[in-house]
Length: 337
Image 1 (tube, rainbow, N blue to C red):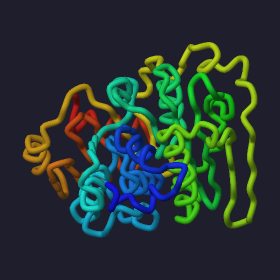
Image 2 (cartoon, one colour):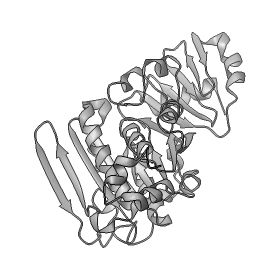
Image 3 (cartoon, rainbow, N blue to C red):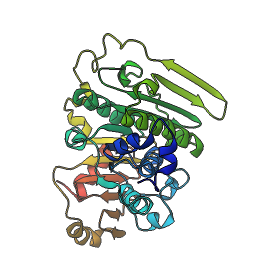
């Protein structure tokens, strides 16, 4: 321990006692894209003992500009992001328990994913999942660090149940503005900064440095040289999460079974049963343009021009359309379960 973490332990606010606390901590990183890869890299190198990583997607070439754990071979092999991340991070620090989970974070699995965790770190790219994390964390009493990056702008805050307002007190559902990395782009340095803010607040919390935690939401634009800090005040009195304890994101909504992934020409459909990928490869090969199988997913090029990306947990990405009706039609035509 002393050799690996010597420089970190020389930093007196952490020291040997803080390092042992990090090594005995468990965190959940949701989303292993741009933010998630930087978060995981920092926390693995810092020696956080157990890191559970969850992501629903696989590595594509457009990810390589900003998702720092991935390379061209991950694209060639179509590795799920958490699998590619695990391969890289195990080489970085073999003493950390890495737990990759290839899944979509939903109402059905969020409670299980939170089990045993001391902190949740947001590496997602959509507010539907962020509000789910926010509500689930506040219900379970687990701190939640929020981060967002788009264009050259970033935002970050640490929310602690019982101590601070929650995400809903600052950002109402539907207030995201519809801007995403896939519609207006993003530069990699802003991702690094946001995730670094998240990581250092995570380390403060895990070592017990309560007096040093930042009690504000910061926003900045590194291209136009702007920085703002919104100090935490009292929670919004009508907040349905941290004040009224209603947790709206934890209420079942049938419409969530199919969702268009903004700006990606992709609709995700959650099936009702697991998929045996080898079976589906044999079934779809005679009628598809091309079928590619690896241990984690099956990609099918359809004659209509769209693609199906199928996962063992039953999820299917219909790529090449943002029309949910069209996606459901293709899903019913080729999968029908």
